[in-house]
Length: 179
Figure: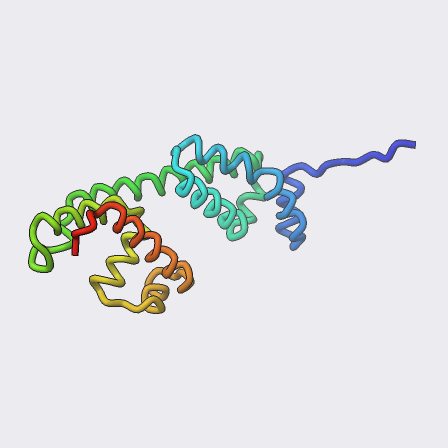
């Protein structure tokens, strides 16, 4: 005698999660996590941005379960939410990039000769925004790691790691004789 196994639909799982069944969310997540991330990555071609968008989308599922459960097609609603988040994050990243390019120099020639300041500014602008933020807050705003963690909402260890990575990149980008 064959055992019949029925797989719940996305809508049924979303409804079960709405009723408090955590395993239902886990099944939805396992079912769609790879595809959702792949879709986000295909849209933006930036792994970090895609990961953020996917994470934000899953957070939206948790926070807005009722809307997701009520959707006629859970999967389509999920992917549309991911698409919207990718576009929002990409627009924000573009604005931040343009602002950084148009911003006043980060290092003023008073602290170093003009050529060194220009090289340091160029190297700082090459850092990923999250690393650049830590360097600027730590060095130029004289904040402690706990203060930066409070500002960013990140763990101190993450801040320390970003600072270390940023300094390694800056050392590699600048000649040995740079102060």
